[in-house]
Length: 386
Image (cartoon, rainbow, N blue to C red; front, side, top):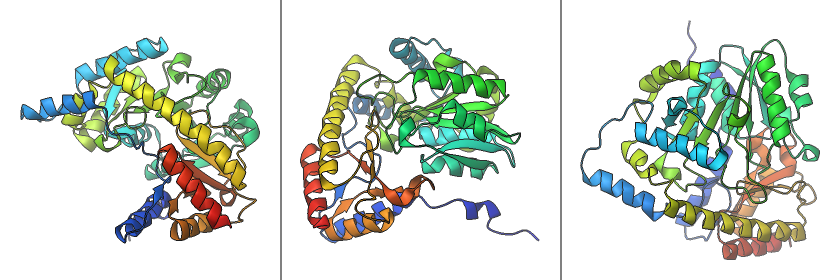
């Protein structure tokens, strides 16, 4: 007899931060003032040139399906962006426009994962990645990463965890929740090892553009057999537009197209026309100003947290997160985060979401609020701590 729901759903944990955010919204609805530092969403509005491009397209009334792989002109614009920003030339045929980076990861795993195949992921890491693997009957295998290696895996970590069942590796640089970067030499070495083993490498680059001391290198520099996931959500401030892209090795193009046709039909037409303006000089100028503001926020929040008794084992180099060690203040980060929300109106994310590598000792704080609000949050946390 079949068992419903599918057994694999028992292995898919809820996205705890979304539940915490829902509670924060409920408190706001009851009249409480909440400082939101829980969800990875820029607080800046979508840049005006992007909005104007969407409005112009919608005004035509011709809001029809696009090709499943996306508007050809947008795919060409993305390819040109790689050439300008990274000096990497890739044919636009390898670029697949998707309904956010989540859909890009979904397509990648749908094309690669098989029942029982193992996929190496960092712990801590973005929680949905392991659930994408499990959704296609794969087995996520966490690699504990630590501050001494910048919360990123080393080549020896990958070698040590690789078995005959391993199908591939999913990395992120900058990483969520830690904001750390992989150095080029390590990324190149891991790419070479995975290739040698006949496996597949997927690299999440959705926080590219939001780095503060050094630019991130795209994994596309290290081989044309790597899947790269990108998004218009973070650097481009287009979270609610639900648009991203996937760079695929040439030989996967037709299979990815078939999957996209069946799973999504096509990405949002207005969002794609809006994104055509994302690469214009006027838009990039706005975005670079916002990158500087994120740096200013990080440089305010990090020492403020240290003064409160948090320990910052690494300096975040990108994204907009600080992954703080709270073990001097609590032995249970989940209980701490929930109590802080109820008592002080500050919403932050417990380490529980990001894996099993000492989650009770860590909290993720997103500096997606202005410095004034961050100062208010620090003051409230101080009062909460007594």
